[in-house]
Length: 462
Image 1 (cartoon, rainbow, N blue to C red):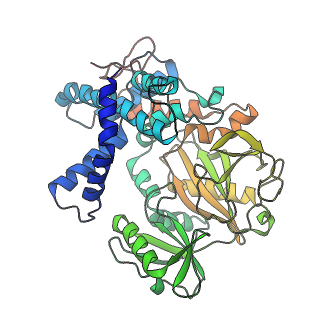
Image 2 (image 1 turned 135 degrees about the horizontal axis):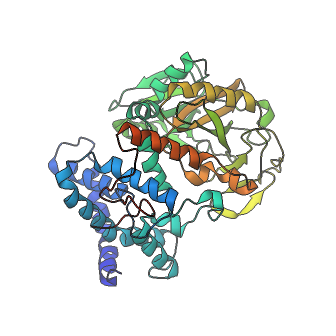
Image 3 (image 1 turned 45 degrees about the horizontal axis):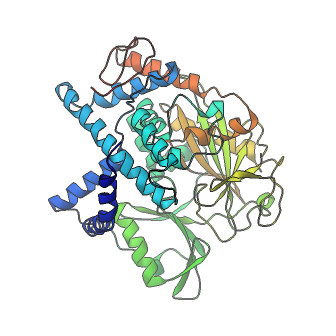
């Protein structure tokens, strides 16, 4: 346990450090060595722990996954540097874990050094688990299908990045390039009105308002709805953002210009909801996260479906920031009860804002949407698991984007609620076997951060 004085010192200086970092990082022209170093430090802290190492012996599947991740990640650096860099990376995590836990505990009004804080730090040290997985546990996280050893979503994100090919991952991140690829396969995608180049100033008045009174603007790359917003033109000079916030055109132009500093922006027509879903959400279409999976060399199939319903007055909330999440039977499109992740103890058989029934209802045009993502999966043949975001609009299903860094528990929410077994773990193991064979390591071998005997994947700090 690190001394309380260290955490106390950090908390006293946190506001000053944050202010300094904001000043440094606010300069979008990253030219000075200080600003570049600050960005690198920020990226490293966000990426910790850098590998899947742990101090406690794991079970067979979890251990094998950990060892595979470590093999793939540490082979990117010179072999002579691994004995130095690996302990250094683990040391950074040992120091940063209690600090990150303290920051999160303060945000959620959890007692620092209390039982939850101590459990989070210990599990972070022993298993490399992120603090939010302990302090804000996922709904139904104790279900058998949700747990593979002590792996959390950070470890799964590392695994997905190593299983799929780099070229397919890059294509999935580029929404414009992917839309062109899947449109050529017959999938429906939103029409592009214009693209704003990265670093270019944004003039809201000059956007293509002739085609629509409400536009949807999002970064070309990235995920998690970061930087995305709907913009509705009101009486000049006012605009409504995301269905509720009224903003002056100058302030909105400045806001979008800041977003465009990091990435190009895609401007599209705001999609309208299908008639059969207007009682659930009258302003925005319901959105499906259809997860496809495939065995190596096999055909893709729909493994899971989670529906997102926006509450009134909201256009771009995620399931983590206020939208209602509704698990859906991936075979039939039948809806289960809904859940708010910020209130995980309650299930909703109807939407709380108007009483429209959810439980037992079928997603409109579900089979068409499922067939479309299976077809679109041909564009990413070397990615084992893909999360497709699909809108059910007034003109039919439309694919927004593909996600390749997925949450294990979010994929299996319907399985956990219904007690349905999932084939995904076996699919993962078979992909690991393929990747090991490609690297000439079909038989498990000793590697820094892993073990080749007994419970494979036991890792320790050298």
